[in-house]
Length: 243
Image 1 (spheres, rainbow, N blue to C red):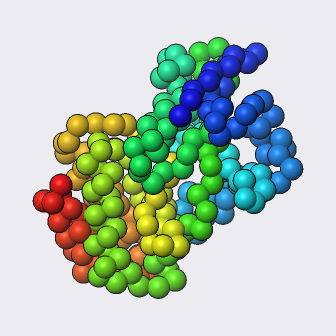
Image 2: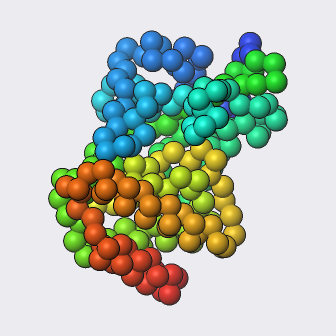
């Protein structure tokens, strides 16, 4: 991973020359690509209209504009308090993704990150390589039941991230993606961090459990029940004991 930072009129762009030879501000809007389409979310997932698939097969990327969530998001749509370039959300996520990808974890390869300053505030965007042939865990479970091996392997895969200190700030059934070989990928590491072992590991598992139960309540056809969760925990703690 080679990191390059270029200043712009209102901020800066961080990118990897090995992935994309050159970058411009035009690439951070959908109209800057010949092809773009919104990422549509199902079953209450993160498809909020701020994430786009851009570029053409086989060279596709994901363009995401950072937006606020929760109650504050109703008042401030997409602005964040400026605390320096290295503390900006896109630069922090880009560097975290780069480190995880270099360590062999299944995360999108970061391409470019941008911030634009507006006084004491800034807006932000991130471009990553699109992971082919994946679907969210929630959509996967809508199509078919997981089975004992599926849930145990999922738990073991989550432990692999935790063993490398990966804290995901919102580990839900949308940000966990399953590829055509059944492997787990994690997306969207905004506010994520690399931490020593601690209570955050149980916290993220509990967040995923709440997410699955919430989706099951809204969509009874989802193939998820308490035994599935027990199988996931078995896989997680078996991986922990063998580490």
